[in-house]
Picture 1: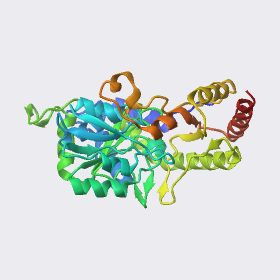
Picture 2: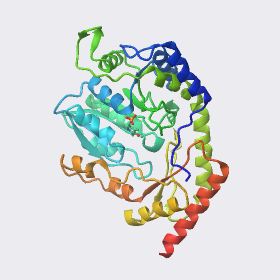
Picture 3: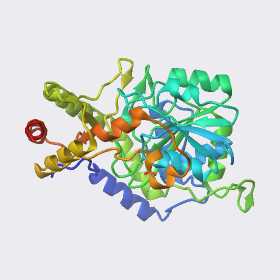
Picture 4: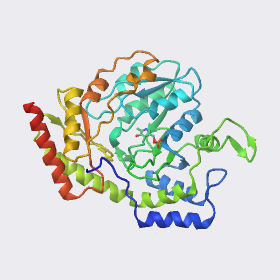
Amino acid sequence: MIPINRPMIGEEEIQAVIKVLRSGILTEKSGCGPFASKFEKAFADYVGSKYAISLNNGTSALHAALIAAGVRPKDEVIVPSFTFVATAEVVVLAGARPVFVDIDPKTYCMNPEEAKNVINRRTKAMIPVHLYGHPCDMNPLIECAREHGIVVIEDAAQAHGAEYKGKKAGVLGDLACFSFYATKNMTTGEGGMITTNNEELTEKVRLIRSHGEKKPYETVMIGHNYRLPEIEAAIGIVQLGRLPKFLEARRKNATFLVKELLSVESLQMPMEHDECKHSWYLFTVRLKESNSKIRNKMVKKLREEHVGAAVYYPIPIHKMPYYKLLGKVNLPETEEAAQQVISLPVHPAIQEVELDHIVSAVKKVVASLAIN
Ligand SMILES: *Cc1c(COP(=O)(O)O)cnc(C)c1O
């Protein structure tokens, strides 16, 4: 099976872990041990932000960002429904209400017009998600956020290295949250990072990361243990150095797949907006004018051909059993996309012969679906 994703771990990462183990410092109370500090500086440099704060995963990064932004019970936070559940989960964890909005069917990112429509005086923040690694159309979002005093938190968990109008994901909103989960463009196993240019928010996130302690045993606000361990930080430093090469390989694979699959009429290829740079975390095609039954059949058949196809995401958040209880919303573009999308392997470990195989398997399966 050609897996949908695979962590790229080499000897350098292994040596980095050994170095931490031999150093005897595995973590640090404030969350900022020597490797974590170095990782933060390197990451801020990479995205072009003033500050970067490491955390133990992308979900805790999103949660800490919301609390730092001042989101409180009864507030509303605008989120897409077509995303990984963590984007909405952290809103509920903060005691606030996620307000789901529809997507742009071409990029699968939050539609700025839809976001504008749901703003009211309870709206405190919005979390645009750079889904699959394609940046959201940020300018209109920022503009209306400024107008209404709303904090913009980028969910950049899938967008390491993605760009919007020449700027990297990570400096497009007030805060940005990254994940280093094992499948992401770069990994520490589990890990996260917040980037921002705002010093006050940085201080708050640092407090939240470690029990709200300004000095040891002097808690000034409610926090958590959201610290990134030193072993993970050491892996992160190596992975960040390798990220440009990973991204180049993903882009090369994506370009090849688009070129070879463009002629398949029933499939819509993923797009990359002129002023954007995709990070190609996922290569997601769309089975036009189809439904989930046929799409699921296609996934099953591709897997029989040893192509690890997968669906991100088959159930939009507002349709999940828990979130359904929050109230009914009508998101036609989201619901249609959830029935039609299918992601193909695009990661850097794919060999050229495997790319050829993916192309021929997709063509074969699509042809067989047309007959049946
Ligand atoms: C992976 C991911 C997260 C959560 O990150 P974790 O590190 O797994 O907690 C949040 N949002 C999106 C869009 C993701 O893909």
